[in-house]
Image (cartoon, rainbow, N blue to C red; front, side, top):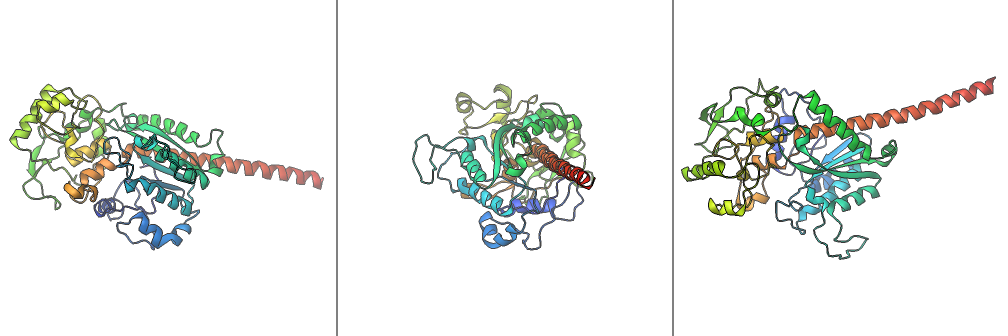
Amino acid sequence: MAGLDGQFAIERDPMAFSTFSANFLGERELPVNKFSWPSWLQKKAWSIDDLLAQHGEQLVALEGCVEILAGGPPCQGFSFAGKRNAADPRNQLFEKYVEVVRAIKPAALILENVPGMKVAHSKKRVSTGGGDNSTESYYEKLKRSLEEIGYEVHGELVNAAQFGVPQKRSRLIVIGLRSDIARSFDCGVMFAFKQLEQERKRQLQDLELPEPVPVCEALSDLTTARNTRKPCIDPFSPKGFEEIEYDKPLTKYQELMHGDCSAVEMDSMRLARHRDVVRDRFTKILQECPRGVRMNEANREQYSTKKHRIYPMDPWAPAPTITTLPDDVLHYSEPRILTVRESARLQSFPDWFLFRGKYTTGGVLRTKECPRYTQVGNAVPPLLARAIGLTIRAVLDIAKEAVESKIGQVDGEEAHFEEIAVA
């Protein structure tokens, strides 16, 4: 969406990679560029460990060929919404990210994670050798590791709702510039965040979006009240489910999301099959509980639910943070949870974007599989990503112009001296 050309992407989960492939590697006509994909890399789900082990030489050969590397290590070990486990092995995957940076040496890098990455798991100082200690947050460890290999790095908390995303979603955005590029700016890598603010304002203006975009402006065209129902024939869904038959967008945001979808049928519209007792409970919650905030302990006890995180949405405010659990959020006007497509709308995925794999999973598979609701909940909102992409493009262009200007000045001075010498 920012006009960048993707080369390849590393995704461990087969379902998530299938979604990526359906959108960026197939024959479909899309309003964005497809990924070119190198001949040496098989088009399949890869772990970053296997990539480094099997294709280390090819990665090193990419030096000078990749301007931007974007990544997002798993966030579950950092998240305040989860168990926040310091021993979670996924916490260490940022080190693999650093290894890829060291091999490719991109001009700029981007990393996204939950705010908890900036908070140390323990306040107890325990030396682990090499100057490391447990009081460091994983962000601080990441920053130090990247600085050691020649990058200037800074991370800030960014709220997606300020970029046209109809969702209150605060995330840590880390931007790194190779040191020689960072020196092009008086304030170094901080220039990128000043540029991001300019791109944010320009994006809202260019896309004609309010700040913030409320839930009803994002989802009112997807209600069962204004659309007919039909059987869900999605091959990844068991029989017996229904979905809506889409009519048309009603608001500016909906037109933006649906604008390039004329030739592609929207998928992932499957409605939940709630029991009558569940629908009755949801109806009472929508009628009696405060909107836009998490149900408190008294409300949860009153409605006999053990879930600690349930948000009845406020139609006139941005949605709460969309997570990987579909029953965390209740629809603002109908007694049901959101569909995958509605969750994707709140993340600002365009309607042409297809999702593949199971809709959800449970039990021990929760930590092993990445079904559709998880894919959406884990994603960087595309409108936020668009602004970041445009920011990095602008920063690299400005740095390039600065270098060319300096070279031109030096050439001019040399020519002047030559004229004097000849004279």
